[in-house]
Image (cartoon, rainbow, N blue to C red; front, side, top):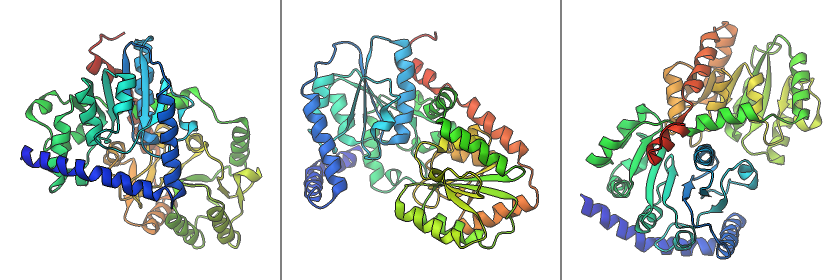
Amino acid sequence: MKVFGFLLFIFYTIIAPFIQFLFYLAIFLSPRARRFHELRLRADIEIKTLEVPNNNLYWLHGASVGELDQAKALAREIKRREKDCTLLLTWVSDSVTERNLVDSPCDYHYPLPLDGPFSYNLLLRTFRPKKLILFAWDTWAWLIRSAKSSNCQVYLVCATLGDASSRNKGVLSYFTKLIFSWLDAVYPAHSILEKDFLSVLSSKQKSQMKTLGDTRFDAVVQRILNTKPNLQFQDWAKKNRRFQEGKLNLVFASTYPNSELGIIEWLSNTKLKGRISLWIFPHKIKAERLDYIQEKLQSSAWSLNRFSENKPESEIQLMDELGLLAYAYQYASLVYVGGGFQHRIHNVIEPAYFGNPIFTGRKIENSSEALLLESLHGLFRYPSMMELLIDLEQKILNQFDFSKIRLSNKNFVLANTGASQRIYEEIWKHPKV
C-alpha cells in the first residue's frame, strides 16, 4: 500500500506546477490572488538579502491565524529556554496580517509559497533550520519532504485530524499515510484525537505518539492576563452594562450572513425583550452587511447602535471595530460562537475561559476543545440557527441553571494550559526549569 502512496505523491508532484500555473493566471483576474502573489514576491526579495546567524534556528509553521497563535505560544517557551536561538515563523493564509505578528517573539516572518518540489529551496538554503514544527493539521507534502531532505527534523504538534477529514478517507488515506511517515513524531492536541491517527501512523510512530496538549490554551490565557482593551472600550462596556443592569448579555461572536438573518427573524418574535441585551460581532466587518443588519433591526422594537457611534445606551450593539471580541466575553452571560453552520467552529477557548456557556452549529469536529466542552455539557450545538435560538430562549425563560457550566468551562481551560512546556521538553528533551 505504501507503493500506492508513492504513486499518488508522484501524481501530486506532476500536477503541482500546473496548479501553480493556474494560480498565476488568476493573478490577472483576482485582486486577492494578486495580493497573495505580491506578498510572496516581496518575501523572496527580502530573504535573498538576509544574513542569518549561524546558530540554533528553528522553523515554526501554522496555516492561518489560529495556528499562528499556537506557534507564538511555543515560540515564547523556546525563547525562554534558549535566549540565543533564532526562530522563523511562516504561514499560508492571506487572513494573516501585520496585526497578527505584533506580539510574535520570532525573529523572521514570511508567507509560504505554493507547495511544490522546488518551492522551499530558498527558505531552507537561507535559514538551514534544525527543526520544523508544524501545528494542528497543515502537512503539505513537499514542505515536509524538502525539510527532511535538508536534514531537518519535522514534528506535528497540537495535532488534529478528525473523523470527517477527507485526508483519512478513500485513496487520499494512502497519500496521508505516506506524508505522515516522513514525520519524526506526532503529538495530538488531546487524547480523544489519538484514535484519528491510528490508521495513518506507522507502528513506531504510534508507540512514540504522546498527547501533549494544545498551545492555544497558553496563548489565550497569556493574552487575557497580559493585555487589555483600549480605554474607550472599557468605558463603553461599563456604561452599557449599567444601562443593561439586571439583563442577560448575549454575545454573538463571528456571525455570518445566514446566522445574522436568523437573529433578525428571531428578535422580531422572541419573548425575551426586556430580559436580554445583545452584542453582535460580524465575522467580517463590511459596510453593506452592517447597513443591512441595522436597517432590518431599526424597524423592530429593539434599540440599536454601532459601537463606533459611542452610544452604549442601546439593547443591541453592532460591533464594527476589530480587536474587541476577546475582551467582550468577560461581560457576557451566554455566547454564540460562529463558524459551526459554515465550515468549522471558531475559537471557543476565549469564551470558555470566562465561564461562558457556548452555543454553536453542528460543525465542531475540527476543534478538540469544542468536542470536549460538549462532552462536559458546557457547549451546545444545533442543526440550524433557528433551533439554536429557540432552545436558547427556552433555557432563559425556564431559568436554566448555568452556574455549574460556568465553573466547569473555566476550570477546563485552566486545566489544559502548559502544552508549550510539555512540547518543548519532549522535542528538545531538556529538563524542566
